[in-house]
View 1 (cartoon, one colour):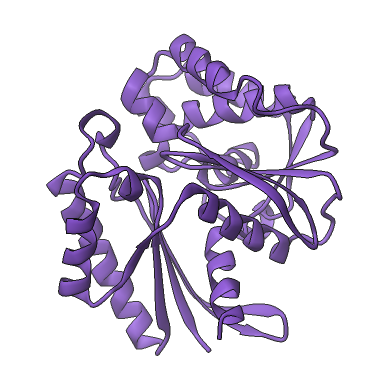
View 2 (cartoon, helix red, strand yellow):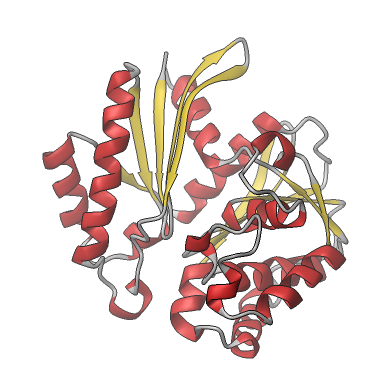
Length: 294
């Protein structure tokens, strides 16, 4: 069974078309676009018409890919859509215009699917692992082991949300992150695993990749010292200069700093000096979840 999984995030819209075979995924197509559906939503409470148009265009492209590969579409929407006052209008418009059923999922369900994807791609997962997925509008925290998730939480703390609120004001971003994470994380974990654009981008920057390579990124290790050096470098650059940094996609240059601040605070609170980077996450989790229900 071929499945076309689409993750409608606050910043990016990603596609994975794959077919599960013998416990592995045969990857047929992967795409990523950055229409920033959640632009200004944390100030206005509404999805902007311009952002909806950009996102609908991306979904139309993805639908064509899914149809060409004769796959079954499975579309979820996370923080931006679930927070939007006009989410029902958006979901209805996508269904009528493209024939795609969009599921707006709660943060806890987002965490569950992310963890399912992470465990499908990592062999050496500790029995006391903390996994994090730093998104545009929210951050998911997942505690568990290889056999399954034990606990999960979702916080309205994301890279786009912080950028919309504080711009490049690093001190205010750090203050907000510290306040949101107070008493949320402890030091009882032996391993930290990270998934999502902020963390995979940090790995790409660390390796100075001219083009993204998932084989290099997956299961790579980032130390807290390396991450701090990257933050120091990026925060000293103008936005235009930031866009020239190897490994950093230009359309992520304005939101990367808040994402790094969130990660560093999690590392501080958990007292873990390094993070394992996972290239598998919610898209893979969606596919395995769909297959299990058939």
